[in-house]
Amino acid sequence: MLSVTMSEYAGLKPPKNAALLKKSVGLARQLQGEHASVSIEELAVEIAMIGLSLPIVPLISGSIHVMCNPLYSWDTDKVFETGHRFHELCRVLEPEFDLSRLIMKVPSTWEGLQACSRLKSDGIKTLATTAFTMEQVVLAGEAGCISISPFAHELRAHLGTSYHDSEPVLALFLEAQQYYRRHGIPTKVKSCGFTTMDEILSTAGVDAMTLPAEQLEELSSTTDSRESLEARSVFHRAAQTPSAQQSERLSYIDDKAKFYRAFTTNGRGKAKTEDSIAVFCGFQIQAEALVTTSELN
Image: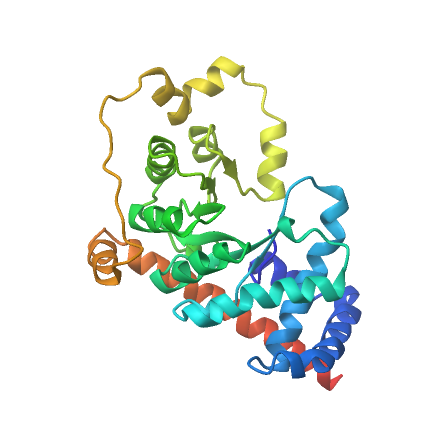
């Protein structure tokens, strides 16, 4: 996945990408007349992030993911405009790129997911990120997101600090996937934000996972038997003992107040979402500052 996150911000910093930044700034200046609603710095960051991701397209069979500016998390129109702008920028950077392989990551606010619903009608794919509650799961499915990324731990727990998330939401992965399948909703669950190998193995069977290279390397070295690994998976155990209980199909897409009443009272989900968005906003601001520095050099 490509977005202005910790690893991608770091990817823009090395001297080897100085040329990419300068090229992105130059192209942003050329295109700003067509995208007057955004600054040159913001447009250059979008161009740079897409420019970083396009070279891997021939090496993968799936999609590339680029994150919407998190500062727009509560602005439906801005998120909607960004989805269309990403398609236009991809056409400029790589005219032959198959746009069905581009997915925009959008924070799981009510406003952001309203934009996802509108973008789906225009054939633009989205992923709902920074999700910590079933309310967001339900709304992302209604909005027609291709997938949703619930975080096992809040984002701040991954910043290399001493911060510890005492309330991980590992159970949400299974609950979300079961909900979608029971109600015939095509949205996939793409789990992320793990801190231990036990957490990863316990959710084996989820539709997809986002894992950093070091965790993939650790997984590749495991010598446990398949039976042993399956015994640790909550998905495997759930498949062996199907529940007779059928969850009610819920709806929030047309009722903002109903969504926020449920979302706000569901543990620390709302606080975790807002804090994660704040972290992403910090990286967005730093990325735009890199662009400004590049313009001065």
